[in-house]
Length: 567
Image (cartoon, rainbow, N blue to C red; front, side, top):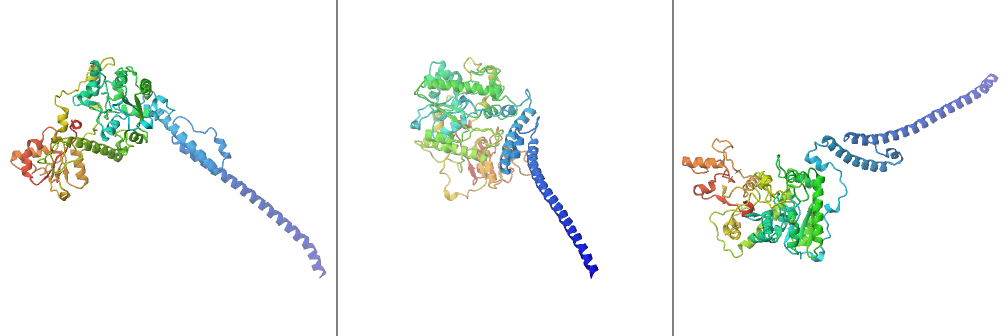
């Protein structure tokens, strides 16, 4: 018993020491774990921060050209919380991406080798001078819908001239664009009027009375420059227009118009012409063209401001509110305002449907307005073959638009025989035509009749549908329309009886008639023939009788459009 007691007395200190050691070891372990955990959390936060920063830097590195991207106050981001950092890096990234994008364009197109596109887009936007910005406060609201005619546009080509012309025509105004009559351009009649001692528009209005002159120049002679003083003095109560747009976009437009791969384009021509404010050899970049237009705008404002009876309407054609303002000022429907004469090659961003709908609206309004005036007082009788008519639209054959400004009339001889900047321009392309313009406009043969088809016949017209209209009168539009409706349609080329589609419809018609067969017998199994001529031979004229005899129950289509536009 005594021995057991002694052993117990010796074991108690040992157990206490052991317990103390275990507690100490546990404390050290716990402290180590706690310390490691704290350090681990700190490291994880730091790693996350660095990853975020690294991602931003890596994303920006994709756009790097010649220099490293390090934000000036990059180290301050360590003091921000996560939300602040996200906002900060988003802002930095957006700014740097833009700056690097501009730098990359400069790097890819060094000075002396830049193409036209890079010249017009490689400059950071700066605050525009007032001479390149439209003023929206030049017309008091009390003057809305009371502005006196004539309306004279003093702006430049590719700055909305076609848009203004379409807008006013759509609103029922008599408007001219480039040509002031069938036989004379506005550039020629204004220069002749001044030469004969009259105000600039005297001989233009004598040829064709108009309310609106949307484009005065012909691309080589600019009455809005050379005869500006005469316009201001000759029309003391006129309403003048000055159009504006982004200068880089304008330069890009003129340096790609007309839309063809090889020049000359507008900018190249103008550099050689020694125009007022643009001496020969000047106009190599957007800055020089901007300076030219700036000087013109300041001159226009200065002259018109001196006459309290004259009005200057300034319009930024790219302003989304431009249509609303124009509608309010002139009482024309807002839908009449829209893009016209668009170069689709350099404006893919424009919604084709929107542009098409706007132009369709313009043309329908213009057509209805003209037809209402023409049919009033003219006894129109039913035609012989008018089973269908078309709301005309431009053929899509070659991409030309209704209002091609002056480009389809341009020739290299302009530079040799045209205006040299000092004298009056002699138009090389005027057509001497003695016929009365009013006679052309009022004859019933130029007006589509809409009473031929009753509603009870809708959807039941017999095939084939044969277009007897002329080229550039909507044949492509009809072809696309019928094909869209799943109708077998031909246009220009006809395939049939073993022939491939390299054979024209005109060929198969002529060959059939030579064999003594009906004209369309070997032209293929089509339900619609939308262009049967080849541009030089017209079976719809030369073989009209034979075609009608072969298909007496066919539905014949005759298309119409304003004769001047077609010409």
